[in-house]
Length: 125
Image 1 (cartoon, one colour):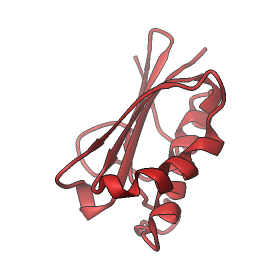
Image 2 (spheres, rainbow, N blue to C red):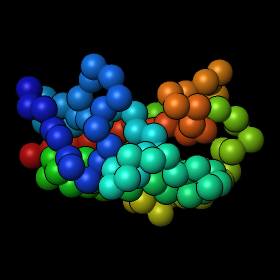
Image 3 (tube, rainbow, N blue to C red):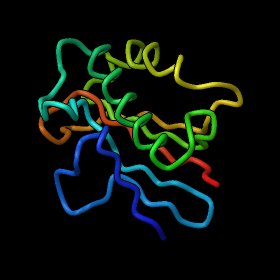
Image 4 (tube, helix red, strand yellow):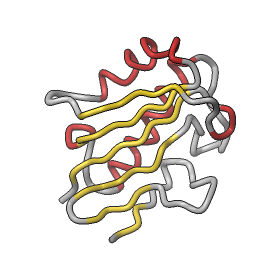
């Protein structure tokens, strides 16, 4: 196993890694809309928040030597399923066919009271 750390993504806010590479896969921890340069949350609106999440994921994928085209599984956690369409519109341009498997679930709460958190699994190597 290899720990992946990107200075261009927010540091973990608990006892976990940004990502772990193991057996040809990269397991990226759920990312929230923290701007890694400032450490501040980006929560102007749901699209801006989701875009920051995707950029954080992109930074970690890049650090591991992979990208969104190699993502095989995505999990999206939403505080409000009413944000599904807006998050999906923001998420879609980052992905390409064949699209990754995915689930989107509404949760009671997320860390730092954010509205969206996204985790991915990608191929590496």
